[in-house]
Image: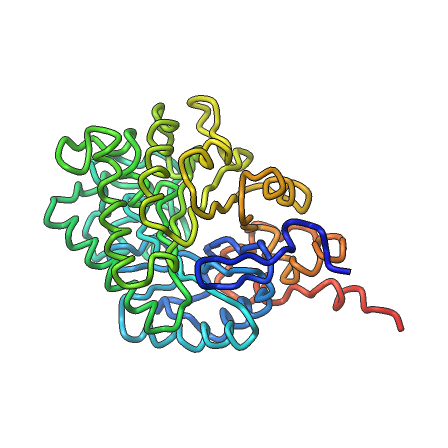
Length: 372
């Protein structure tokens, strides 16, 4: 009998037909090597998870100055574009649908990644959080630097880089792209008053702090149809030293303005279990539903029951899962059959640069073979 679980119902996402409402969330896994090229191992990893209604790739750098994580992939050169194509083709052959997440790390990067050039930000506000590993840190970690505050001309150049990356993603065969505007990376630092101290057209008010994201979204939707473009935000997160006291006003405004773009979805890291700045009452998916009429995707901390509940109560249309997908390549099948999930993958394999703990997780049926 067909499942009655809302997560397992089909969904029409623009002109894409999704077989279920489970998305694989974007997760940096650091398997692209020093050249930052997608590869056969990554193709195997994504194909194993192709029963997801939608796969959103790990963050993928749209430009050299966007780089800020070792062994993560890019899509800003001919070689990078060419390397992604067989990965995307393999996902499609396995029956999946895949969006490329465009990820500019902004001030969360370091000059070691950029031949001595300081990382970019709306304002020269230093990241005071945890240090980071860089190509020159010899396996250790180094503190963040005070970033370079972008000029208006430089902002225009960055927007052009997003557009060019979207063009390359289209040429590589991706079904769409997701704009990463969350987690303290470049776009998020423009959105938040903690990190955006500008007094020009890109800062100084709720409306002006949205302008950079508005222009990036306009640039990307000039390449892909708007219903093949998603945006991800994180109103509650403290990751990368973030959190602004006016977050409720700011992010509801962001959602309201993005509604006019007729996007594929708005992806909201709504859960507070993975780091909450505690600067006010957290927003709910229903708060966003009041100002956003399109598809809403919820993320962070959901399991089978709570994911089904947020769809059933009208708060969300789709739910994305991150960490459960690391050790459960057959997450959809486990939910459908009420099979137990594998234990969470240990943190030391999340970004280990090698095959261990990446594409070597068995499915439930491989772990517990069906009896005849």
